[in-house]
Amino acid sequence: MTNLPLTFSAEVAQARKDGTPIVALESTIITHGMPYPQNLEVAQQVEADVRDAGATPATIAVIDGTLHIGLDADQLSALAQAKGVAKLSRADMAVCIAAGKTGATTVAATMIAAHLAGISVFATGGIGGVHKGAEDSFDISADLMELGQTPVTVVAAGAKAILDVAKTLEVLETQGVPVITVGQDSFPAFWSATSPLKSPLRMDNPADIARAHQTRAAMGLPGGQLVANPIPQVDEIAASDLAPVIAKAQADAAAHGISGKAVTPYLLQRIFELTEGRSLTANIALVRNNARLASQIAAHLSVSKA
Ligand code: PSU
Ligand code: MN
Image 1 (tube, rainbow, N blue to C red):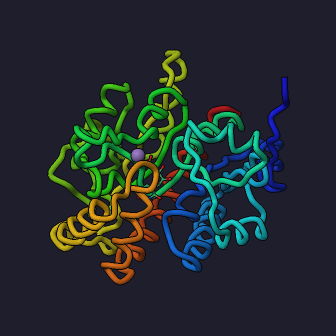
Image 2: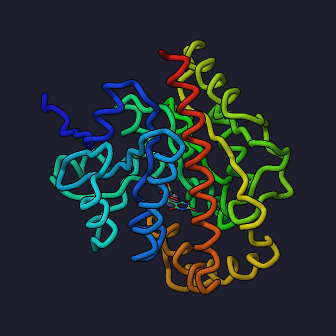
Image 3: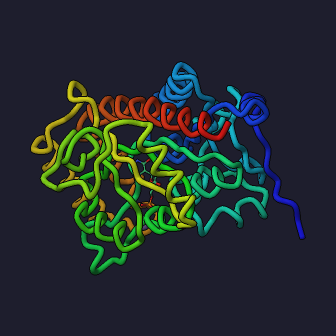
């Protein structure tokens, strides 16, 4: 049996020793979700937000075959500039580690790594979901099945309109995933604070969300929770402004024959270009907002453990 090559950054190792709150952060958003140099600036800013909120950030990635729980400043900077980094989901992570390669973790892979490291809360921007046209393509993100089996609470700003959001909520229900929107009844739509869809569940504060996480564990239920945190209203983009942009990005993806793992990164990049960066500004605001909420949830979880 091979030992898993897993290493903690200095600050995460210290937080583990002290029993203080830790928030996991994904790395696909850095390598495949945003262009350089904004990706690095956002990654650094989000880590700073977690620290300001009294928790320790653990950005997760595979570097040269080692699973890193927390990156130091140089590693983060190198990853943000690296070319040809693999995008790792549940299916790819072990192969990447075994082959000694470098890869960025998606929501699914970050949940797996966080759970291995004993971290219960994870902040990101948007999760993967059921793509439009999935009835033909079968393109359903492994993120949804991961939420059904790995006990990590994931804070995201809802699902992007590049997805079929109604089908995404159906699959989450089938997988037994609590979808909890914070402070409102409407399920948020990533760049927009509200959508026409009602959120399956609602909670209004981090203490309740932490208690729900612990209650699932006490019941022996596998799987995590999806916390949908609406983008702050000052930062949102109206859904009607984005609809034509998304339609154009999707038409371009189809015209170029983009499929499989390449679909989400292609659409994100294309929307960034088509909105001349406006999508990115909103994206940054919502990720930071999610990092702050995740830190508060993590604080409640670590207090009740002590
Ligand atoms: N949605 C976003 N930004 C992202 C992603 C999704 O708004 O960066 C990334 C996340 O890492 C997510 C992954 O886990 O894409 C989903 O990819 P796929 O649809 O191939 O499962
Ligand atoms: Mn997919």
